[in-house]
Image (cartoon, rainbow, N blue to C red):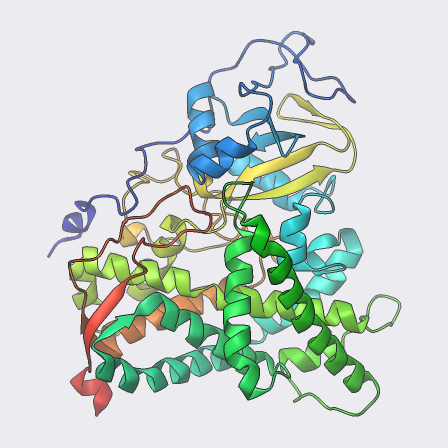
Length: 476
């Protein structure tokens, strides 16, 4: 089979064929003056482009309805990589493309403080977390995560080995069951992997309860606006998160008092032993929040593997190709999954001072929203961006501002996610297990379509596999 045959498959997610061009024609002159509230676009100096405004007083409900395509549709319709709107009654500038990625992830004139909706902050990040720090304080705290997730390759290898063991342990049950809800099983496997890898002090009898909680936290944090956020259920979810945080806080207090000793080299030990720039340890509650910052994202990685299974079914030739060990092709496949899969749709920042950028005046306190999903599907940088093409040979790197599945720029110095290498390693191992450890069937009578209005989203029926059996070589 020649390489051109890999490029003939339809798009898995029925996306539009293109997004906003990276260099649109210059709009009419105008400028937003420093301190303006953004309600109008007054005329400015000649040659300075005006920022188009999306119609409507507030578009929170539209965002909830349109989901991942909300930003992309407006970039296309306005033929501009920047536009202004209101979300949650707050003025926001929405941006897409590599130039915007460089601004959001590398520019010290921006801060993450105040950029995340408070509900998302309470569900995932926690008060005092690394996501809410900037400058030298942010770099110092983030260095701890860089050590455990980037520099400590043995730690990543241990994470992958734990994941593989937990996956293999579930296979005998799958063989007995016949029909296997793969999404639910991956959630279970990954949270148990996260607990074992971090050495989190959670009793075995509590694991099932925390499985559901951590997965639900990751799910709800991606929901935006009244249509997607089940407000009557929210107090219970926040209460369960608070209960988990209290248990972990108590454990860190015990460590501080010398009554417990975490296993050396584990993330639990690294968080407990962290010292800030003044030599002070984290407050126990902050340490608990940072541990949850590790547990939650690992628990959510099943979505990537779930979509990988869908692509292996739709592109059956790759299921055969990857049966033969080839780390380069496995990486190609996993990176294209990361590019294509709808995960978190955007990331925010706030201007800490007024400044000019690309001919636009950004006022102090301006909320900015960067389109992660749309940038990864920009036709200007990814030919036939709506198609799944593993032979793009994507590699995430500090100088690539178009492949921004988990951010852009420098991991050590900027706001790029330090868990990118661990994420890629888990996806690769999941694909390897699906192609070399087991054989299975995927019943045709299931709906694997994806609604881009769900953030984060999954195939509608969650993906069910059946007839699971060991591959002969793996079983031997």
